[in-house]
Image (cartoon, rainbow, N blue to C red; front, side, top):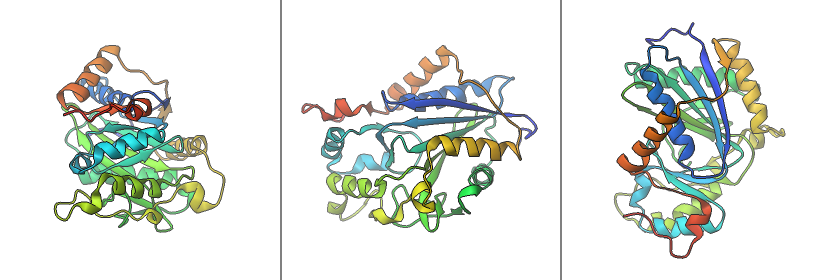
Amino acid sequence: MSFSVNQPFHWMDSGIYQGQPLEPLYRDEALAAGMQRESAVPIIHLWVYDQALYLGRRDARLPHLEQALHQFGQDGFGCVLRSSGGACVPLDAGVLNIAWLLPDTAISIDAFFAFVADMLQVGLRDYGELEFGEVVGSYCAGEYDFSLHGKKIGGMAQRRTRYGSILQICINIEERPRGEWMERFYALAGLDEMEAHKPIPGIVGSTVGSIAGLTGKPTTVDDVKARLFAAIRSQWPVISVPFSVEESLLAESEHHLSQRLQLFSFTAKELAIPQWRLPK
């Protein structure tokens, strides 16, 4: 890595979101835009969204996506089309999202994944040894899945901006029927009706788990945040600071994601409106 690990990571927790599901993503984007400054430091940004479907570009090809999102809106889920790779991931108050942001566009994709995987192994060691690799049948399956006892508890997605690199992960901490939610979502969206060019393989809900469910111990998002911070700090320089980013960068990043990249975002209330339609 081209940045020095002696330069402390800034650990920023921006809390729980319940408004537009795009909001935490443009906060990540704004933090990445700030990487252009000479004084930029690596950042670890933590957040929670309660609750929404974070769609991948591949999901846009589903034949009944509009109907599925409308139904999930009635069930209390918002939605957003995200810019980082993969397919749909359900987020709720029991899922912790973390973004690693580096003032570095030269680090290789594999090196960045390996670095964050090392941090996760250390940060989550109290819950068991993580395994990395695709969990077949899980939602948003890929080679950078991570699992406990053979069940997926999270995944990673990475992308670059002009000024830095972002690696975003989600960790299932508290128990919810997320695998079953995704089975139902893809059934409603018509995945099984697609005979060719399916955007994803089929989903088997039982392939997905959570830290609390797999360890049999009552574990909360706040528990994991505290253990992650303490464990990571034992091996890497990291300091906790309040979340902060310039308002101008927030406004610019929101415009970039929603207008230039055309990432749609809707709350559950908006999706549940009978007249709601997907943007063309």
